[in-house]
Length: 219
Image (cartoon, rainbow, N blue to C red; front, side, top):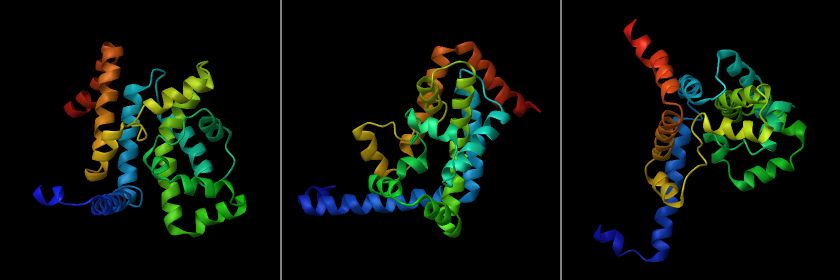
């Protein structure tokens, strides 16, 4: 504690950048580039989507979202994926939210054929895009479900961001803490989602928890 107080501004900024870099490297190694995590996380996202979606959620919805997410992540045309992003639904997942502004701008000026090629020949891009498709599956599935139920694209996209963890949702202090303690904001957002749905729909939420958690534990 005493040593930290003796640091000047330049030293403090250097340490902050180092912590941010190491924290980001750890998060990517433990999530994006670790396929078993992506697969297990897909199951947790499905559970949360079932819990939180006001329109319901099924495996068929997940498959529809995964198909659109796979096309979009690998640079192929997908109307569902494009409409989702046009209505502010994108960048709520961990992978998309972790992309820098410069990287996003660069992709806008990269020829589509080269984007599609890199997505396949580069093993890191291949894994990342596959993980992104898995992460987008429940969000795009709920988005499509909302459109089927008569919601406006903007309403459907907003609801789709809220059915699972929105990694872009954080205040200034939470972002600083998250640099030092990886995933603390994700755990906090998950808790807030559960509290919200129980407050808005207590009976329905209790029934879904029973079906998802309690009954399987009794069998």
